Amino acid sequence: MSNQPNALPDIRQSIVLNAPIQKVWNAVATAEGISAWFMPNNFEPVVGHEFHLEAGPFGKSPCKVTVIDPPNRLSFSWGKDWTLTFELKEEEGSKTAFTLIHGGWNEDSFTEFGEAHRIVRERMAGGWARLPEALRKYVEA
Image (cartoon, rainbow, N blue to C red; front, side, top):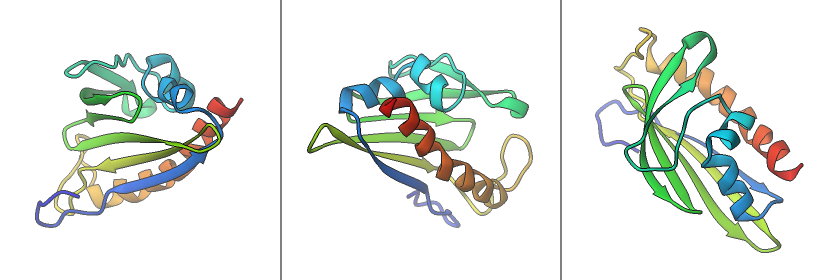
């Protein structure tokens, strides 16, 4: 959670996947994997790597890798305000706990497209609620 005044809570989604941690890591830390369940991209798992997410009608979203800690955590900046973090934790029975954290929300801020964070956050919270299931389908197939 940011210590900015008027910060809005991070969006968090967690799911336990019936797949080993390395398989989940490959799904969240490779361009091919991320494309399969999230958005087309040119990601590389290298700190400082600048890449784009193909955000459909919103065009190419600029991103930059900030943390790579295989196979447990990766983070990248997304657009001018946001941070996306994927956390993985090995569970018994070759399962993986996966948590997605989308931070950087502020009541007083607007996106590059001029929309208020509080409005976009609501919309994206709904989208994020569905995405872990897309990841599940991909890694459990």
